[in-house]
Image (tube, rainbow, N blue to C red; front, side, top):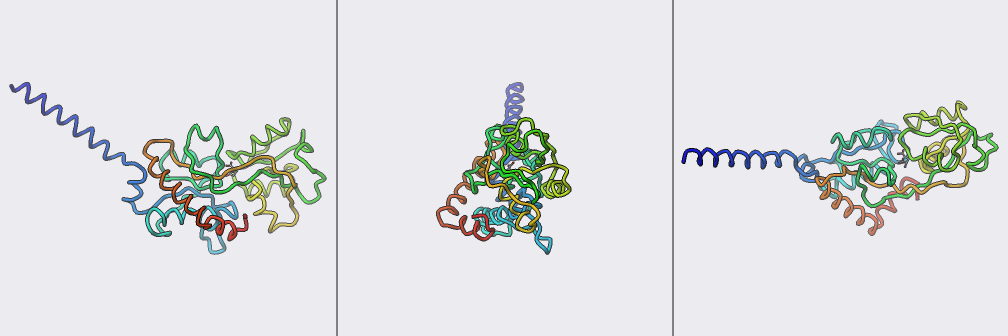
Length: 259
Ligand code: GLU
């Protein structure tokens, strides 16, 4: 009899400790609702998507989108905390649970889909080439055997490997560093999303974009690839679909001149 009671007590302990563990690891949406704010990984140097305005505040299309998602999930566009990420550290920051999601000019690619989940696309960019004003180049093939700048962790390197395999690739950590390197003539051109490059050419007439686009870059919100993020993904997709059908997404694109 005593043996049976001990076994029964042991069983209860195992069951309750298992339940306890489940409580500790909540799903992402529940954690957000309890915390009453979302934590979003964004760019802070990529105009007009995520950048610091003249007062030092974060602004841009991705930032506005994050605020809309906060409003949709928690009822206020102020219930959001931003964490600055770069193309090379953003997936690590997401998987370390430093952020709930990434809204960081991040394109959906097959390779990235192995490690993160994506929302529906919220913008489509394309990759372009930026050169110094006196460059004679007209297409990507003119850079065969030359030097081209990319940002580490971005899709630009793949675009180069596919179009000009013998180009010498020079990488930088951020877009402003890459732009300064082009201006300092450390290479013959820079490859990046057209919208990001336009952020430079609009304020600097000594650089320009070549006409052609070399890839399609569907930007989407990235989530951890776990069951715990599924409810959050569902809700965010619902918010994005509503923004699309109500014309809100279009209006934001007009606001940031990326339409
Ligand atoms: N959209 C491209 C990418 O996801 C370039 C922009 C970026 O580096 O964030 O790689």
